[in-house]
Amino acid sequence: MSRFEQFTNQWLPIIGESVIETFQMVGISLFFSIIIGIPLGILIVLTRPGQALQNVVIYQVSNLLINIIRSIPFIILLFFILPFTKFIVGTTIGVKGVIVPLVIYTAPYIARLMESALLEVQNGVIEAYTAMGIKTPSIIWHVLLREARPSIILGLTISTVGLIGATAMAGMVGAGGLGDLAYRFGHLRYEEDIMYATVLILIILVQGIQSIGNRLAARIKKD
Image (tube, rainbow, N blue to C red):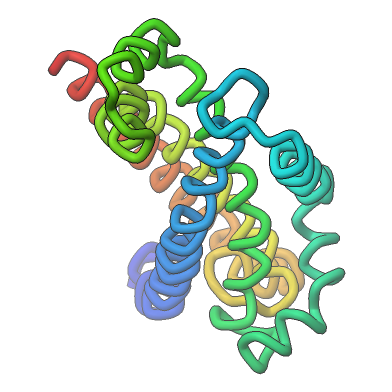
């Protein structure tokens, strides 16, 4: 039996399970982060000075909250909110136990990227729709979000790549996934083949997601 066959027979089921856990963490966390991050990004844009719903208090508080969370490294945030995570989901380990910190870490990041994307929309376009008497909700949906679609997709792509990196770090504290696989077997047990396989899979995942995001953004920009 070749070394490759031996490696496949021994580790393929474990690697497959780790990949599934990584997809679960990324998919669930990204879903909730988008639900929180996109509205938060829109809120920041609309409440900033000179915008339709300008409100200094809401803007400053939201802006400060995002900056505070983004300034905390994920691994520190993970430990810092352990009591809150336990209160929300009942556990601090496994895929379930890492969803809360992943969402708290990623949502402000998406909000900031969303803000940058929406601010790229020319004010003249918004002013024209406002002058025609179009209501703010319609302007958000039909102007801001529509015009900023390529930038939003690129922003979500960057967020997804960052989220994959965060899940790898979460693996060091028992969250499962590829990070846990690399740490337990590749680092602690000196299984170099596992470490190389994990790195290769992560590279393939990141490159695949980035390529899909770039192509989708470019296609929408042409429409």
